[in-house]
Image (cartoon, rainbow over all chains, first blue to last red; front, side, top):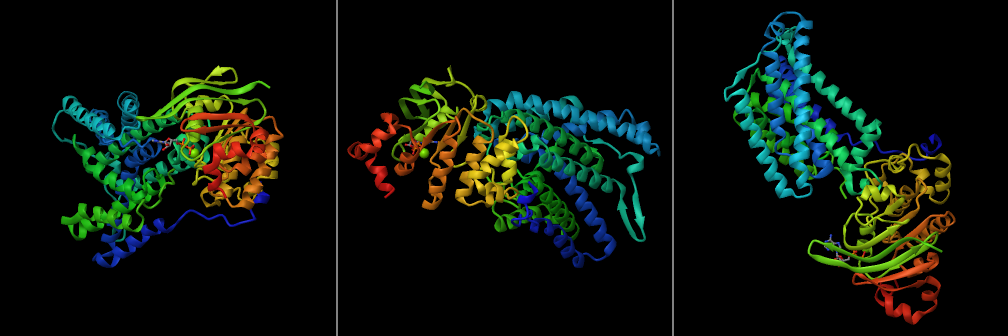
Length: 334
Length: 240
Ligand SMILES: Nc1ncnc2c1ncn2[C@@H]1O[C@H](COP(=O)(O)OP(=O)(O)O)[C@@H](O)[C@H]1O
Ligand SMILES: [Mg+2]
């Protein structure tokens, strides 16, 4: 089919939203007193953005595919963090030695356990709670809120009401030092994991048949069914994967904060909702850029004017919606 | 000629509204049947009910020997029914190629079939790598039709393909349908443009207020202006 390509210019993807990231970073540079501080804040913002992206990416696809807004998503984040804690605390001997391999030998099973549990819970949640209310928005909101309350209470019963301290594995503590610039190791790891998750999602969405189905389903699930595909099977898979990613994000977030508590999922949900609205509901690329913007703005403003940190992200959302009412990358909906 | 599709006493409710109120008509094997009727008569609802997008509350829909009225939409499509909805249902963010790749359920696109389709739907070839949202209205309609026939289907349901198109493009569309008619695909075409319908139809059914009020051969209706006026007066005026 190559002979058909030359006939015309194929418009590339819209790059303006991507350009916002360096624009905001550079705009912050003159406001921040020293370069090392700016580097620290920028890396912290990117790391935070990557973790939010991991937690938010499943939710945006779930909404895009079936118009399901799952308010209980935050519970999967919390549960992921607690499951990992239950694996990591008994293995403290492995996490607190200076051997990278011992650290990983504790961390990897913790992450896998968290993702397996949240993935399985997500699957059960979809089948039992979401399935009966497909297409009924008010009931969805109420029932997923209800699911959230049940999940939070269950966490209290299983893990108790107290905040649990969870220290980072020894080799992930500390910073890389370049002159007077210090970059926290854990933040670098968060950026690497976030990029890996984004790359994997990008490849699945753009290079596989299932990905083609998901992208088409986000636009018009009825038409996908009319072509002979059972969109609900795709949706169940996406819901499960999204829940497992929420669990992964929960583990990373908990290790970043070095504490775990039953409200942590709900606390980040505010940022996650802002991110998926900024990105354009249903758009993974938009979610990625939205998460990085939110992470950067939260860190810059948190440093310059700590009192208005959360408000600044709401302001960011308002400004972006004034510019693009459907978000950075609007998904064409029928 | 036997019937590929037969609706008998089909009723459809949308919410509290009783839209189809006992629809009976048949689509003979191999031919092109036109479903005519003024705006709001229930033509789109009829096609959506066949596809299982609305569930019939009563009646039978027999396709190829089996009642499909309670099957899910994917199951209906898998029986070999291609659907071009009134809205066209193009995936705007997917390229022309991706739209067609997805529609080819059985595997990779058959390149000989594709070349055949490029013959009467040339825009597809030209815009192969373009996101479908950038196509013009006529090109989108061509893509929607191509998507429905990318693999051989037993029956095509096409909802008002001429809606909003310029006359020159409609003439092109007539040619495309003539080419399709040379294959053994059976077509059920919903139309309001009587000239277009007359150029293509073998048999015709006319709907009004959720019921079939006339059915017979297209030639007969085309020759009987009084009958046309009576059945279609309003919609004909709309197209003058
Ligand atoms: N989603 C819907 N909700 C309520 N009424 C509908 C809906 N879709 C169609 N109708 C009504 O059903 C009737 C038939 O509509 P339709 O099948 O679209 O007619 P046609 O395709 O012949 O123009 C109209 O009165 C229309 O208002
Ligand atoms: Mg219609």
